[in-house]
Amino acid sequence: MSIFNIRVYALLLNKESNEVLITDEFRFGKEMTKFPGGGLIWGEGTIDCLKRECREEMGCEIEVIKHFYTTDFFQPAEFHVNNQLISIYYIIKNTSPLTVTISKKKNDFTKQEGAQSFRWISISEITGQEFTFPIDRKVALILHDGK
Image 1 (tube, helix red, strand yellow):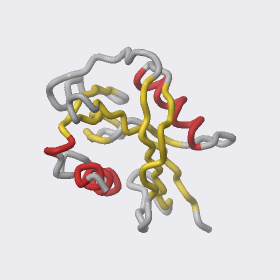
Image 2: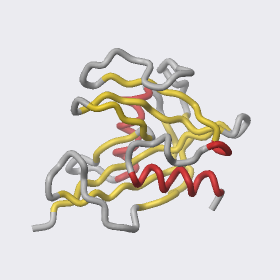
Image 3: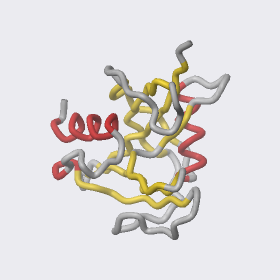
């Protein structure tokens, strides 16, 4: 039986500084760097999921500008055995202010389950290695290359 784990992520761009918002998190006993977003729950569409995740994580309302990328290769889920991961990324803009603190340093939190911090990184300087997970790395490089 195939089990799919569907994740939806936000690419919040600061066009003035050519940066994208990323999140550092501590989950499952592990530090990780990724794009903001999370898991689709039963009964949600992908955009509703992303709006909920942005309210929960960043405390803001958003508007989806356009679809950016959907996983086009096989990726087993890291935290769920026998699950295939499908990730969907959208370029968004916030329609209300972010209510989170933006940090200048990586993992700017106390290591406890669920801890999270945010920071802006330069799109022109992204290498992909800033990210923990393979799909985020690919998206970062597509974003960097402007394709």
